[in-house]
Amino acid sequence: MASTRPSSWPAERLGSAPDRRRSPTPLRDHVDTGFPEHGRVLALDLGDRRIGVAVCDEARLVATPYETVNRMGDRPREHDRLEALVDETGATMIVVGLPMSLDGNLGPAARKVLSEVKALRRRLAPRRISVVTQDERHSTTTAADSLRRQGVRGRDRREMIDQVAASVVLQHWIDGRG
Image: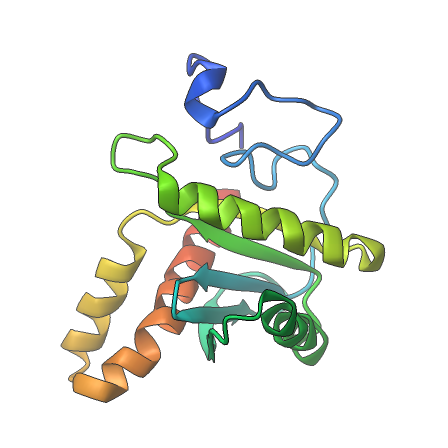
C-alpha cells in the first residue's frame, strides 16, 4: 500500500517538508519503514482526560479494546503505564490515533498528539518499539454508535468509549495494510 498522504499534497499541509532521515510524517504510518510485520500492536487514543488502549492479536487480524488509562497530569507517569502495557501485551509497535480535521489539515489537537508521539518515540526507541500514527477521524463517533447499539449507557459508556475508539483506529490500521 502506498502512503496515505496523496503525493499532490503540499508539504505545508503537514506542517513541514518531509525529511526521510527522521521519523515518518504524521500520515505516513507503516509504509516502507522497516517496522515489524508480525506481533501484537497496541493502539492509543490520546485524549485530554483519558487514554484509550486497544490491542490486536499476533496475526494482526482483529483489534480488541483493552484498557482506559486516566490522565494524571504527569506525562512521564502516564508513559510509564503505557510502557508497562507494551510489556504486558507483548506489543512490537504502537499505533496512535491522529485527530486530523475533516479537511485533512493538522489542527491544534493533532499537533498536541504529535508532540506526545514524539515523546513516546524517544522513550521507546531504545526498545525498538515503533510508534506510528493513523488518521482517527470519526473513530469516537463510530465507537459511540457501537456502544449505543450494544445497549451500553451512561457511566459504563464513558469508561469504555476511549478504548473502543482505540480499537476502531487499530482496526482501520490493520485493514489498511491488506
